[in-house]
Length: 497
Ligand SMILES: Cc1cc2nc3c(=O)[nH]c(=O)nc-3n(C[C@H](O)[C@H](O)[C@H](O)COP(=O)(O)OP(=O)(O)OC[C@H]3O[C@@H](n4cnc5c(N)ncnc54)[C@H](O)[C@@H]3O)c2cc1C
Ligand code: FES
Ligand code: FES
Image 1: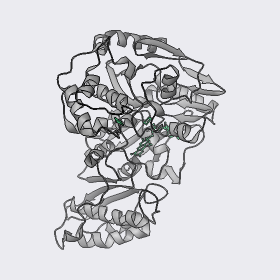
Image 2: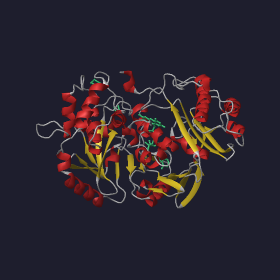
Image 3: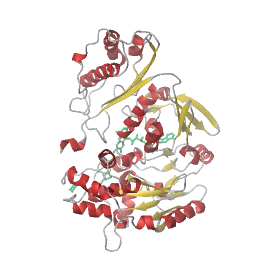
Image 4: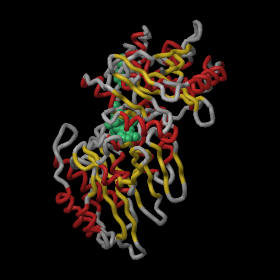
């Protein structure tokens, strides 16, 4: 049985198909204010907010896409929908702001925008445009225009009054603590021969995987739920990693950052800001805040997509994972984990426990370039992560150039790297080395980019990396370098309006 607060009422569910999304559940309950637009996490019409207790036992609010979140993920949380925002006859300040600034026309997107604004308001009480753009990047509007919605954000974030959720904070915390202490050791839900287990510790997860080797692991479900909503797939047996306490942990030492497999991408973004600001910037452009609030780094590696954004960065940083089967652990480089298109070395009953990123103990240069048609909430056409160390003489002492979108798996340009290792980091050597990229890769053409575009982009991004790192100025002539590497790519949606 799972237990959660639907606004302030306790809901207990046991007899429910675990393939049910939160959106389906809400609409079945006649909570139809939450809309279905795309059912694939792209439009934000289904945005709802969850509140859960963080490590300091404070309420942490998150906007998520109800359409790609399985109902099991609500266990132990407060689920807040658009219907809950009004207090008596009074609109919530975020709703009022949308009315006052004419932020809505057809209104289909509006509940989603309001819920994202509500979640933002719980984190931030002052307006700043960049944060608003980040927070609303997962909400699309086709009628109103973003200016009016931005004005609504400005109104909602300027001196917001406290609301009924603030007033009921202590009571909500108490109820969530009560749910947590009542919780079974391994809650489960099931119907129609489909079941989901929610183990709370790593040993139970390991045992369940031995008992049910055919099951499907689910973390944030931002990939898996798409299979259900877009491909009509049904998972018979899901086992969630989201409640496993060890997998939710992170540790940082001077030598390394260790990230548990259930840590969300949004948490990773804060964690990685130091010492890898480019990694944090990449995550800012990873999907939308709704997806990053649910999705995990482990899920992004395990789904083995050739266009996953984080594998190139992790490969370039020489990251490894701790994998566990029963009571046996092994370590594997992220670079060696994916062996072919969507094929990994993960054995039956094995799972990713954590991802470990070493922190270089010497000077290094690390840059990531993501090229996509739109700046926010878009999948890469190509994503490149470059790691470089230079010796005192300006020669390349260590180099890892990792590419996504250039082959069936994310991988290093080993021949290009070999052409640069030990050489002076200058333009002549870069120009010679980048010809090797066509020995390393024969990219495909698809609707995101042609093979010629990908190759040209890869070459220009290596040049860009060169110009953005300290280098010998001998023979430097950058007149041929396209300043807008991505051409019409990397546009922010609000740039079009
Ligand atoms: C709208 C939208 C936009 C997106 N944009 C991007 C983007 O910009 N860049 C990008 O790279 N991706 C993007 N994605 C894809 C997705 O969000 C990521 O791949 C995400 O990191 C998946 O994590 P998850 O926790 O949701 O995985 P889930 O969907 O829960 O699982 C994904 C896979 O990982 C496996 N898995 C999960 N945890 C473990 C574990 N501990 N051990 C072993 N296997 C495990 C699951 O069995 C499954 O096969 C987007 C998705 C959506 C819906
Ligand atoms: S319905 Fe479009 S994001 Fe959920
Ligand atoms: S008001 Fe119509 S989609 Fe936004």
